[in-house]
Image (cartoon, one colour):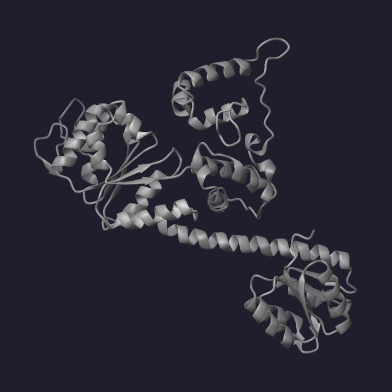
Length: 459
């Protein structure tokens, strides 16, 4: 079966027998074909039908083939033009190719060769149309600070961003690691009346309790040993703008009390200070943990959560919006080619298909890493299945079973991981934390050990 059946083709040649022969042959292939011996009639048809392929002689009675080609390209820029030529006009055909014709074929035409060139041209047209569509979607996505997506879930997030940006309320963002929580926070700030003032990001899980206090509130000169100058805290430097508290679920309880007091009174003091400083910031908080469980276990204050959570935005994991993957792939390839100075000419379906069925425990961040790796290691400018990691393409070997000589190191590793995994009640985040590895690394090990199925669920 012809995968391109139904594609529109226009044939232009001032020899009626050539037009009839080609029209008949290509219709048998399943194409929609119109044939013309007049350039004028052909142009009218092209304007009306916007064909995918135009096959034209370079020498016509009522037009010069090269000039005609240039007129066609203004009317149907997405179409591929194949020029046909006799020996005497070979030079014109070469000129036409230099000016944008997809291919040229010499008369007498060999139908098998023409069929092959048409399929190549249609593949070229389809790829260009796909790129154009993705570029349009990417241009639209830039309105949201580079958050990429056209799925229903992402469209709802964009709608929520628009709604909350104009209202000066605190926002709580919930989502797994790598889903783009900070991008959403930046988009809210960018669309808010505070856009001309600072956006300051702070990772609550990256500092000890004393350092959290110092980073957020600052300190006075000589407030403690080593404080040789006054330091402004992040809240003070962000006054008038937006503060993004990432991993807020990791904030120590004593610091939660201090932050709650600040939110209630809208003033704070530098460490060692006695002068109150008025606070005028919007707080956007985020966590990848189950905040309800943290509150239930006494690890996060319910009253602070109510202060931070005026509006909640739930960011779906990438596995729940797989229709966005081709768009994200195109976006990350464009970024990576610019970053590393590489040239990727084509993305094959063999490259895309495994990505569309892979559950991405590391979400969008993991996808970007995979694309960067593929772009850096690619040699021919065409991304195929061999450019993917073996555990995604299906080429990984597990090596976790006992050998004839006893237990291998990988088998012992499997036993240890499984023991911790069971002890945490199959909680991947807790298991990864105990093992001292990232959640993505754990997921891949579980997958290789056949302890997860392809959707990422426990087997």
